[in-house]
Length: 313
Image (tube, rainbow, N blue to C red):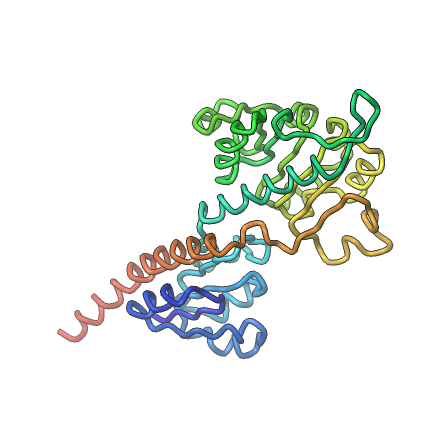
């Protein structure tokens, strides 16, 4: 089967795939849409970076396509419905980045609690300890499981909320995360870790109604798409001091422009989508995606081989 790789991958992964399929590695095509379209008609599999949008146009240009692999985090540029209509399966690793994301959120929480001071009982401005804090996990992802294992070692209390999971779901108990309603999560959390996967129905979920219930001096670490937040509401909560600091792993272009509410906001830290990208997580994700794509492509190839053998008999 023909496999086109535009995402930089570990050489051992490429070699492994090359022994099983006809692999072309061409990262330059990610910057040349016209040349990419010309390469698609014969391809059965693609491994694409987030900069390449997967939409009806791309899928229509690849009539033989069966599977798309995404090693890097985030699927905001993938039209899931279009993939379904074209019967193309999207392959990602659900757990490869969990450790990296958990460490990122832990580091962000520790940094903000200590670096951004609050008034102590004696009137002095001082930092806080994670061990005396309640950490709210908004979104139950594999990284939540890691955090739920790490945070108690600091002495922190953990609670969680996920709109897609009922409080009676076994997963809460399995991961040792007490579920609470969203309002209660906001009211209890000294640290709010937002990792809920973004879907259009969640646009502006964290708006005035929710952020208005944030515990005083709350700090926020967010891995999710920034559209989860209403930027006007977030700016207002930060100016009032209800949210003392926020650390976001990427924002939309224009979010911090001079005419936008968060422009020049003190104690707002932005990183360029680095939470899930570590040397170790990239290797784990690449192998997971490669093995699953090989499985699917091999399965798709079998009927064609059988048909060719019958026609040649």
